[in-house]
Amino acid sequence: MAIDTWPADGSSPIFIRGYRGGNSYEDLIETFHRDAVLLLGQGYSPAGQHYVDGEWSIWRAVLATILIPFFFIGLLFWAQMLVHRPIGTLTVTYVHQGSK
Image 1 (tube, helix red, strand yellow):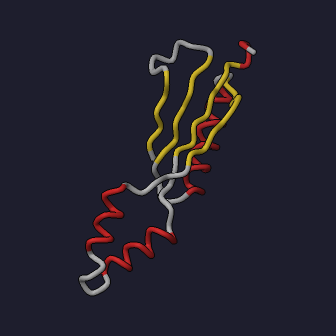
Image 2 (tube, rainbow, N blue to C red; image 1 turned 135 degrees about the vertical axis):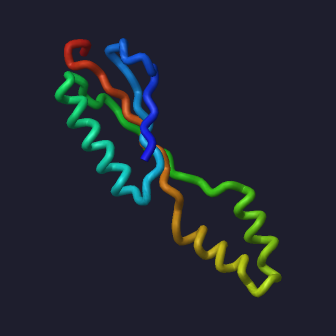
């Protein structure tokens, strides 16, 4: 699981964290909850959040299409892509409670 922070220096009363990766949406939310509890102890609370669905790359779709004539392997790739969506990114804005 990757957590990105903007601004990175940590001197601002408002900062944004991006949570991405993981094995499932539930893992993503669990990481956010653990992080939010730790930041609450430091005086920060979540002020807003936004989730963006993950997307497959165009190259994966092209490869699946090219492989269709070869033993229908491409159809298996397409089926997997249609059934299982990649995990997206959760972006959360944190505000120091004294700064509201």
